Image 1: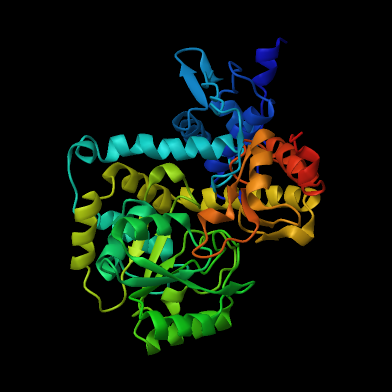
Image 2: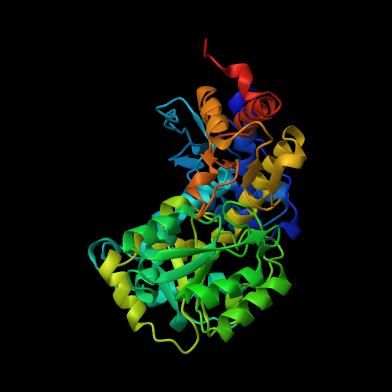
Length: 465
């Protein structure tokens, strides 16, 4: 019996508890291809033979083979049978600078060929279900009804009772911030933000000539007393904050502080812009501010950090009782609309369960990368959240952020110094993105360079003579 004939005896180990049997068979096939147990060009057992071997009906195996075909795993040859498909993957292009880029805060790549195929299959199904209309039509600024319903479904586990009428589909979190900031504050007016805040918000404020007033934070996030002082002195038009896995400090606002911040905002009539970029990552999240004060909070839930940066889709939940007409006008003025194509992809993934599977895969890969970081980096200089994929690294004297970042760059590693986030004096710290390196091995090698550098003195690298 030659190799191909031997492969024809393939019989996956599946359990009825794994869900629909046809999906379990397709998933097993994907796993065996990934592991090398099945190779490109190998012939699979005839459907009836596999049904008999598994003691299940023929229809189930037929559906499994069809699902595998939709995922691009197999191909049928008339009169010959079903074969593992030969793929011609494009080689990954190296970063032009040759750097290991840890400056971007990206969700980590996960190694699950079946899930990746499932993601792409969602795109192919849109061609069948939506046809050319999806490509050749404009939509309303706040998104089509189906996409708003998908957004409400996506948020329902964190925002109880949210409806599609309060959800707008926006062109990414950055586009949402631009539209919303311009709506809430005029040039010269003030918005409060964490003292170390998201650089995208700094960029929006500078573009709109809106002032940002720094609010002090600690390991639990915003200090309520500092926020109240800012409300008294600065008379802010809004508070912008990231309560969960804050960027860059990784702090998550405690429940007690969430209540305190909401109470202060309500007392001074300050609306809150809640950037929930990382809110889908924790398995047991704290309630968002929008669930504690649904009449006061503009909730932004971007998909870049939990699904795919390329989607450029965010869901904006308007406060209860607020009209969405002004928000629609702001979106129309700044970006016209979110891409109907990417909005439809996101909706498809949410509706068929792909989105939840992607989040689970990102969580698993994040946990593995956090374990690598915990093993390599000195814990007394690291601030992180085990469910997030960035690290706030405080530098020991005599290192300063400029020298440390420069030295890392000469070693082929790019990070972000604290200046990019600071509304006032910048501490000596840098942010490391654990998700940007292509693999866990690349991450480990990069972190070893970081750890070695921390243990040395800047004077050791001086070239002054």
